[in-house]
Length: 576
Image: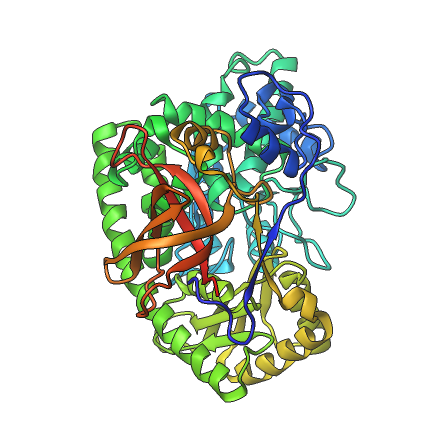
């Protein structure tokens, strides 16, 4: 939504100009300014490559983890990689399975929980099902740090458990044999922003080094062939794109752009209508990732992992078509749930005149696989922390919650505070600063609402509640050209922590028309020059004013071709 939060508007704040630093001639002046505003003052900071990648040294538990894996490979033990039902978990699972096989593992299987059957992560229910596989070693990817009961159940069966995760640990650690997580207390790895797929990739890098030192015949495997999967999981999980993650994502994007990605990702790019040579991190976030995520949200992520593991392009295309259809269903469910949530929020706002400090939303008909998307949408509209709940399964008395937050309000820490003050209220929780998940009984929902609101009153102030939109400043008509648009497209990868460039300025509105019921096409004028613009979700039923102040992205207009550009409006307001 682009509607300002009830009772509070959006403040456009321009980033401060910084010294542009030293740059090669081929880097346009506009990009130099944008990089400098993000703290990148040289080409290695702005466009890091694999040679700049941090070494695995410093990751706590890595020595023991690689010893476990090397021993399992040498002795032919059965390794089962246990994924998670989101895009990060699916790509991490595929990286684990593919990488271990490349490094000589002969007995590697995989498993993933079904959201509606097993719940989150390595649960006791999933452990019971895994018994048929007779594993020797379980390797969790993108989860495990909060799976105490499931790991206890696995250990009780005599299995060895290696946890690879990136989520924040709780007060106690699960009883795994080894844990690798950059966010463990005492871990010295410089980057805490690795996604789950990144952690697994680093484990494989260290394992290859150990195998090379021991003279293993498969120690020369080219693990860079896995970076397409690493890129997709990292971008889709919305972790900060620090220098290290940008090096990983950029390398993976280059593989995808050159058509070297795995069959499944090539098929997903194809079914999403994207052109591989022009693929960007935004395309992963808005087109590829959601189609993969849809399997875990509405069906079974086993289908998504199968797509990532097959080397048969025809099979991959068939699975991708199914995932695309599921994603269409997901969009319809999400839109209905979001409309219902916005209606509830509007009623709350009308009662008090302003938005509440937090919003806790629940509907007994909502789908637990989509509540995270709904929470994110409402968070964007209100600029408030939001928790959306749904029954764990139809008619269940257990609720699954998905929380999304705003800068300055650490949502996982807030849930930890609620759990500490009210023992037994929250059954389980976990996550990050900006996103978290939790489980609680339906009977505890009202008590949770009150406790969460109390926590918010203590932690939120007017400064945090102001929705700021950061701009890279104004552009002159001559700057709004195809050359700059192409430079911005390929100047990334852009994402969390290294935001995609956006600009602001005042324009005259020459013409408007509604597209697809919710979107607004505009013809804008800056001086004597006219520009095409699109404001997705921007039709509010009211005629556009004659002059507007907009925040926008500058993009090549591939549909019109030639020198055409398009301004993608992210916020607009009337100029008095």
